[in-house]
Image (cartoon, rainbow, N blue to C red; front, side, top):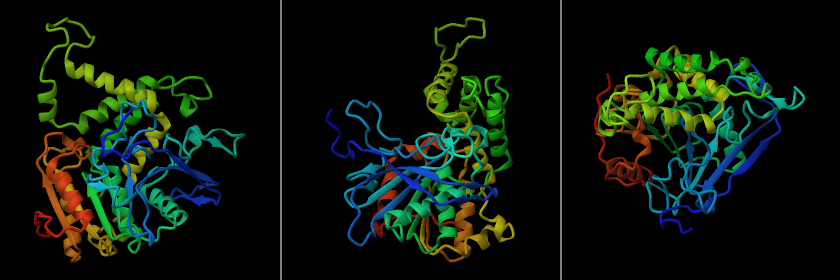
Length: 386
């Protein structure tokens, strides 16, 4: 198979092992852990061209390129990573990883627990936070010999990690890109996460998280959790244009089977997700979202938390994103402006809702490329501090 000219082509994941104990925010300790990583491009001699990609809830290390010649689908952010793309791998050395607690090669609930005869951790895997992830990412940076990232970039939950980087390690990044994110979850967002968790926890096949030991899997619960989540990732306009009220068979069937196209779509998305994602990981990821709040250690003041960063910021929101609305991004921007930080902000008109950050929207791609490339013509929306 021949790959597009702007593709990174075939990529091989690498696993990095850390034998030192990792103390987590919850108070527990991981005796050792592994992180699955992919890299694209070449690290220059002075190691000044490295960009870290932080993934969202269902993301992982495979952000660009292909694992096999016959792969039909590229990495989850292939539209933005590659030679000549917004994150240009002919200029930058790009690092993407799967966070601990995940289910794509890094240590998580499906990994063997050395303290329990190497049985899967399952529900015994500790809850982790965004700060824990950033801590392990900094350890990975040390292993790679990268003292300072040229940029840390992330969308949604990934944007929260980028923000935490700027607070916890202000001297280790020059640029921070926060896309479709928020400084903390609203009560509504926590509620959505709780509904998703309960759909998994109440599945009879969950077995208190020990489904692997019981040769079962809470598939129904995970499907429902994904269906709920997916509704929040799309805008009403996107759903209207994609499905409207179209019927699968063209007429009412007067029953409870799938009738509307949108029902078919949600069930398909849930089914596909349930084949590739771990239920315990889903629980862990949603709790990490709930717990995120960098202002907690700064007297509940985001302004005080944003006094720490030293890097330049690009904050991007999308007009139809109601999961993390533009006003949430503006909270971050306001706190940065109050601290006289260098920040560019764009609220981009896009119809795809929260998922807009995954699409190659022209203004979005152009702005990301300009900011990362250091171009001075980036036009930013000015937002006054409140």
